[in-house]
Length: 77
Image 1 (cartoon, one colour):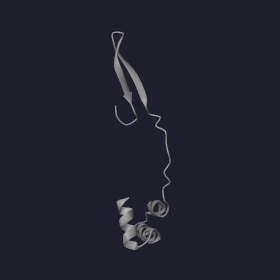
Image 2 (tube, rainbow, N blue to C red):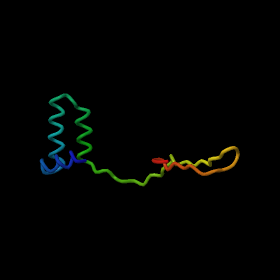
Image 3 (cartoon, rainbow, N blue to C red):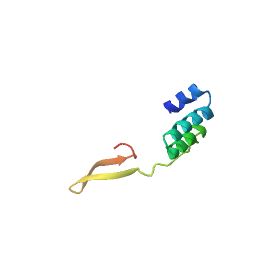
Image 4 (cartoon, rainbow, N blue to C red):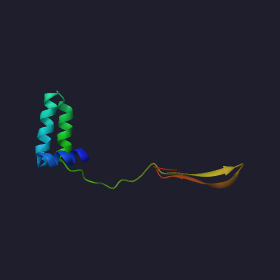
């Protein structure tokens, strides 16, 4: 995001930044990368709410006796 902000500031608007990146990509025959960079610079991301389906919880036992719980929220134990 920092590079996109810097390019937009340097070229005045996202279209100018996308044109500059596309020109550099074409010089190097990086057409696919230039297209993706242009798409990134021109279109805003729409935030969405996503459920974390990686969460899991375990009952910890020692010799048949429960001694605690171990849960994972999808990021940290």
